[in-house]
Length: 187
Image 1 (tube, one colour):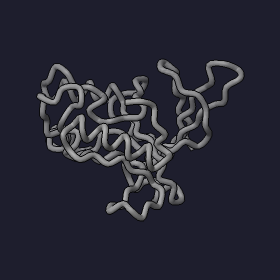
Image 2: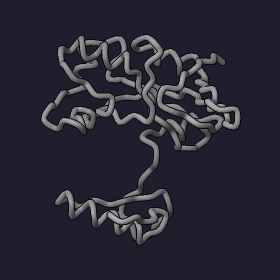
Image 3: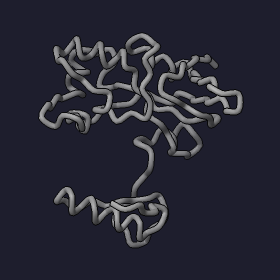
Image 4: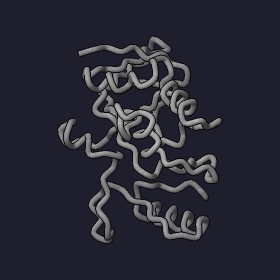
């Protein structure tokens, strides 16, 4: 696929055709622009959390805790459980399993100190726990391993129900790199 400008209708049409031809299924590249030619209404962000909890701004990110995933993997008895199954924007690993839920309960701010003095400090505010749907039953890295994740979460962790991960919003932009350390600031 040659480079295409997804901010333009022609670019989105080109990508849609490419992905449709490649997959053998109809794929539509959508945007939040008002497009009168589109049948469906699409809200960016995987959740309405931004609408409800962030003054209508749907630009939310999804954070997963690797230690939670590792605990689930041991509890349900599988060898591999990839973070990618849960489609995160960010994976953290410096907090205990399931402690990410406390972040939104306390309305915590996550801060990443800049690696270089010329960079800004990234701050992220926790919004809400992420309810898991059947979409995470299939791992994009291993389509042969089907797990009913919502059912398994509810069965093995009834105190949490079908929740895994949290939604958050960027409060102040900055640079985030693999291996950066998060600092948790309670508000």
